[in-house]
Length: 235
Ligand code: APR
Image 1 (cartoon, rainbow, N blue to C red):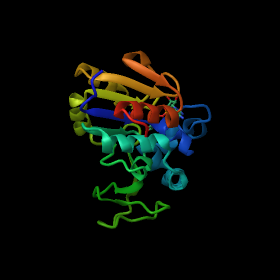
Image 2 (cartoon, helix red, strand yellow):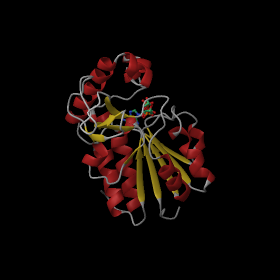
Image 3 (tube, rainbow, N blue to C red):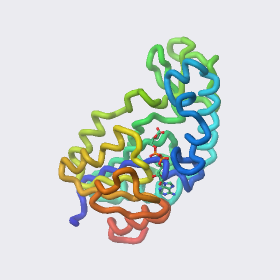
Image 4 (cartoon, rainbow, N blue to C red):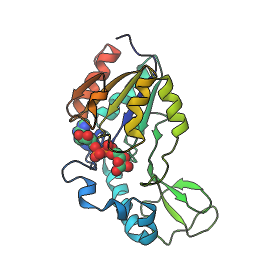
């Protein structure tokens, strides 16, 4: 395979698992301990904003204590050292890609460290703890929420993501079960535009056969190995 020009990488919770952040659907994953309808939907937030803020305050603290792992660092190196463009699209709300040195990370499900005003759409850096009593720093309304895309809401940056997918020579899916659309459909979109497709995951994802190639194992091992191979030198 020629060295790919444009690479689009999609990451999911599995890339942050070895940093100590939970995944969603693995054994004892987040959705086995919390009802996603209560903490990850607009309806759940309307019913009980205090519970939802409590859930995300705990995840914000977990993220603050977590450290990027070798997989996050390897992707940042790839972005710096690869001759072509490397776009990182993540479903994760943590900031571990950025803390490993990655740039222009596209957070399609929002970010745990950002807050949003539902009244005026103002966004700002979230405090460590958010509560229903918070008011928007721009319009003063009492309508603040975590800047997270909940189930039933439209993911962010879809136009930009689709445009990057149409130009990708190589699409790599890392650490995602591919249970949630539209991210789960990116591999088909990339293939339709002629990209080579690779899955790096602990175990085969839903419909893993759609990938041209697959490597199984923990991200902290298989991602650095793949990046070193692609760059033609040890990391
Ligand atoms: N290394 C590589 N892959 C791993 C590791 C690891 N150490 N640990 C787990 N995985 C893989 C699992 O095999 C699984 O395929 O990561 C994937 C995690 O899947 P999910 O828990 O479903 O997480 P994700 O795919 O990111 O979920 C997508 O669903 O709940 C929503 O918005 C939420 O962004 C999330 C979306």
